[in-house]
Image (tube, rainbow, N blue to C red):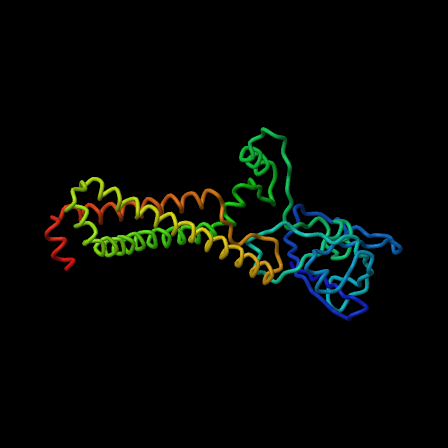
Length: 294
């Protein structure tokens, strides 16, 4: 069964319909919808985006009703709140308006009907055991631990996360190969310098360490540039998408752990590529190096 909660401002004449899901009742009976006195006032809490869209403030009066053609009940905006950030609802165009449960039941004419509700348990209790006991107690509902609900609702994000990990792994392998090629070319350009050092009696170990040290410095400078680009890109993404979706969610988060992992990986790959290229170069005799350089 579905219902429609309609909000309309008398000042602007804006009508907004929010679909409400009303499932089957939990128990069968002849209970009637609770009736509020005629002089009772309805109070409604609007989320910030909805209030901003309609230009409403606390204390404004709305006309609400169960359908678009029956907007006859007055309601006062009692609160404007910011809902908790929810990634699963970021692309949904829904707006949320909250009423007290008796008022909502009277407005919709649907007693003893709910979509879902939460049950708080004592600290130390096992949520799965409590859910199993509740499911055996009666029919007409199904209890789930909150962790299970969160796991099912986040399956899409888990798939996206694994996809990103696969892309990251492919990118790291490709960049390592590219870095090795660059370091080989860079070291090959030092053939004449290496040949001169070998002619004057510099040991292979010293030449090797000098080339590895140069590769390490290049890797550190590249890591610093990469960190700066990552921080700037993350900040730009957050600013753009927060404004686009009007949400406080973080779309890009560069944590110290990610920075340390990136810098360590970059330095390790740089040193490894430099060491491999230097080892290949110091194995060649000085005469051959000088001849190639000429």
